[in-house]
Each structure stands twice: as C-alpha cells, then as structure tokens.
Image (cartoon, rainbow over all chains, first blue to last red; front, side, top):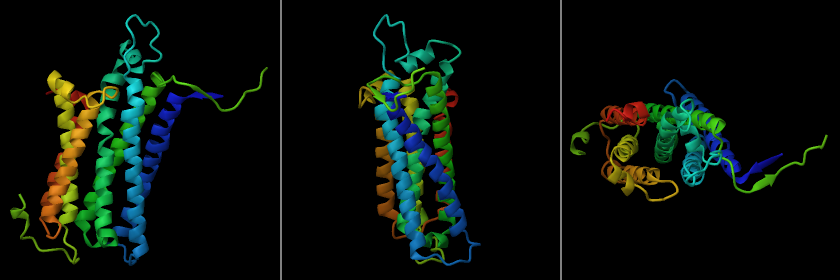
Length: 190
Length: 115
C-alpha cells in the first residue's frame, strides 16, 4: 500500500481540511439553533459564549487551510501544462479532462465553479467568527444578527459541499498523482 | 453611507449591533467582489494576466487575493464607522444577503459566461 506525495496533499486538502469543515458546519448550525434561539429559556453562561467563539475560529482556520492548500499546493499540479507532444496525460489532470468530450465538463463547469465558490466558505465563516468574538453569548439578544449569521453559515456549508463534491468527482476522473512514493504497508506476496 | 443607519434605536441588548452589521455587509461585498473579479479574469486577457500573482496557481491567485483584500478593507472601514452605533440591521442584512447570493450565482460558470 503506497501513496504519492501529491495524492497525500490532495487527501489533506480534501478530507483533512475540507471534510472536517463540512462536519464542523453541522455542529455550528446545531449550536446556533439550539442555544441562541429566542425560544431557548436556558440562560447562556460565559462558557457557552467561549465555546462558540473557539468553535467558529477553529472552523475559520479549517476553511482557510482548505482553500489555501487547494489553491497553492494542489491546484498547480492539477493545471500543470504538459510539454509539447506528451501523449500520456495522466500527470496533467486538467488536460486529461479536457481531452475528452465525456469528461471536459468536469473542468469547464466543475473545477471552474469549485475554484471560486469554495472561497465563499472562509468569507462567511470568518464573518460568523468575527460576530461571535464581538458578541459572544450576547448574540442571543440580537435575533437579527443571529439569523443572518446562521444564514451565512448555511451558505458556507453549501459552498464547501459544492467544492467537496466536485473535488471528489474530479479527482476520481483525473486524479492528482505524482511526486515521491510513500510506502505505508508492505502487502503479502501471493 | 453611514448617515442613513444612525437613527435606529438599539435592540434590547446594551451592545450596539453596528459591529455585527459591518462584518455581515463586508462579507456580502467580498462574495460579490470574488465573482466579479473571476468574471473579469475570464473575459479580459489583460485583466487575467494582471491577476497572475503566483505563476503556478495562475489568475486564481490574483482574483482571490484582490477579493480578500477588498473584503477585509470593507470590513475595516465599516467596522470603524459603525462599531459604536446601532444600524438598520434589516436593511443591511437584506443588502448583504443579496450580494452574497449574487456572488454565489455569478461563480457558477454557465451564469458567469452570460457576460
């Protein structure tokens, strides 16, 4: 069982940061709905406010790590230009997708959308973290602010989900591979 | 821009909502800026070349960096103006959501290609 450094970075970007962000989104939505709605009569403690602040700041960090590793580590490998006359495009995913009409839309729609829409996630969640840092548990006393933050977190979830789904499907059609090989486990020989 | 938002009374909480409104509106501005820069980079070769801040990443590097700088600048300016006031939050929220949804839709290539 082995892995290339490029596929390891793709995993770190997609599953490590992106996947964890998607999971964390559901937690943020539940927390914002459960604790900060006007109908909730339980008084919020300073710990509740601190928890929300730390949680949203951690989510912001995840979102930024996901887009930055995607744009500056994985994407350059994806869009690499093959030397003239290259017949095997396996190491050039973008060109491999564009070479066939049955796969070209994965780039022209999938990657073109993913590479931009993904950045809405850190914008939205950083805003949410900023509001939480500013208001903490007092967010409960600002229902309009809370509803808007909730809406932006929903949009960030949608943006991250679009990026994640297209990322997974694109990597399935034209995987980012190459770099040095990392041997994980030596298999048994038959 | 701030004058029209200053006369609204604060909510039941003592803390004014201006700082939150600034963050929300700036996020909407950032989302739309991202989509507009992406479309400009797609439509104009000169702008596309201008946006290549990092050669391996290509125009995406400049498009996203410029959008993030504009978003943070808008946040900073709005925060400085609104942090100690209460504003017409319903109006700010509506504008911010409209900008965000517009930005979201404009990143979708079939829509972006209409321009």
